[in-house]
Each structure stands twice: as structure tokens, then as C-alpha cells.
Image 1 (cartoon, rainbow, N blue to C red):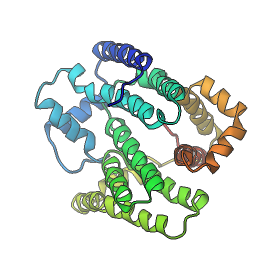
Image 2: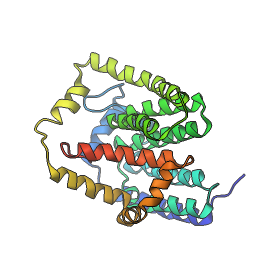
Image 3: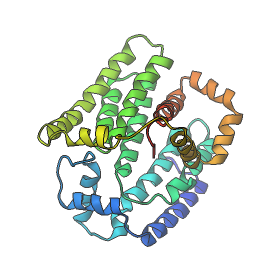
Image 4: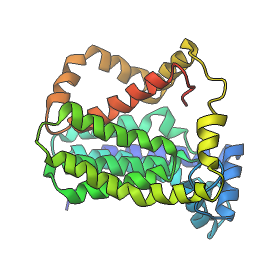
Length: 290
């Protein structure tokens, strides 16, 4: 039986109270109202997104339609992730584990980001999928790969952007893993785990005029052209999400991150951080990200 550091518990309690206060006073926005309608009419697909947030809201609405209650998944998921980060790191270095978890918990995006949107289930499933992928690298067990794939499928059923995490898994193995053929067989198990969700989404689109793909690949991208302005907006967004002090530290300690990428223990997290952001950076020259 282990005990969570009391300093971290204090930060968890304070940030949780702040998030509850913010959620109680911020008015319902249009996207939330739209997704609440999904929750009242559950289905396995909708016009513009995959349906996971609607399923979350269906469960929440079965108890109450109070907006603070409906926003509770977003509030608790970001808190859970901060605590889980601590659990992942504490065996290596307790003080570092506390510091990293605290930095995550007090990041502005996590303190004031209390809205229930498609990002809510996406945060949960992508985090858990990445943790399982990390465990697959440590233990080289196909079961962890399969579970990572199932969770990635749930993330895909939250938001199409989750597909970039699957691409990040492939690129990570290609660029950083040198353990023969076994990791590549593991990647096939990741794919197997995602297939039921991909298949269900394709079936919905077959029966609904391919609305998801027409909306996301054509309607949303019509008129896009090369622009440095979008890239600048993306870089500012990254600085906000990561926070300026962390960006400054990363730029100052580049050699440490190169060493971390070559290490066996935590290179997977650094790779899964840098690869998706690198892909988003390339996309940002043509598409508005965020």
C-alpha cells in the first residue's frame, strides 16, 4: 500500500475546488449545448464527429442535467491524469514525480478547461492508450499492445484527431525502437484493437452519405491555403498549453531531451509528445489547429 505525497494531495484539492468554481459560473457554450442534445438522443454516429462525448452525456443526463454535474467528467479526468502521472514517475524519483504532476495540474488549460466537449473523452482514452503503449515497450507483451489499441479506438470514437496518436506509435517504433520484429507484431495488435471502432464508424458513414468525411475533409478544409499566420497561432497555442516556463526550460535543456529519447525507460513519452506536435506543426501551414 502506498501513500500519495501530501503536497500533491493539497494541489489536487485546491485545483479541484478552483475547477468546480469555474465550472459553476461559466455559462453553457454552443458546443456544449449541441453535445447535450447528442446525449439526449444517443446514437453510434453524428454529422460532424464520432459519438463518444454524447455517450458520456447520456450517462450523466440519466442522473441530472445540472451543468456542473455534466462538466464533472472533464474536471475529474484532468485531475486523474495529474495523479496518474505521479504514479508513473514516483518509483524513479518521488520529488520529480510530484513536480511534474503539479505542473500538469496547475497548467491554465487544465485549471480553466472545464467545458464538456469532444476533447473530454479524447483526453482520457489517449492518455490511457499511451500508458498501455509505454507498458508494452517495457514488458514486450502483446496484451498491452492490444489494450492500447482498444483505448485508441475509444479515442478515435471521441475525435478523429486521435488517429495521429496511432501514426505516432508507428513513427516511434520506426525512429527509436531496435528490438527486431516483435514490436512490429505488437503494432498489428494495436491495429486489431482499433478495428471494431473504425469499422463501426465506416458502417455509420455508409448509411449516412459519408457525412463525417465530407464534413471533415471537404467542408472544414474548403478555402485552406498556405499561411504562416496559422503556424504562428499554433505556436502560441502550444506555448499556452505547455506553459512558457516549460517551453523555456525545454529550449535551455535540449541535450537532456536528446538523452531522454535515447533512454529505454521514458523515451516513449517524449516520442509521443514530440511526434504529434511535429505533425500538427506541419499541418499548421495549411490548416488552423486548435
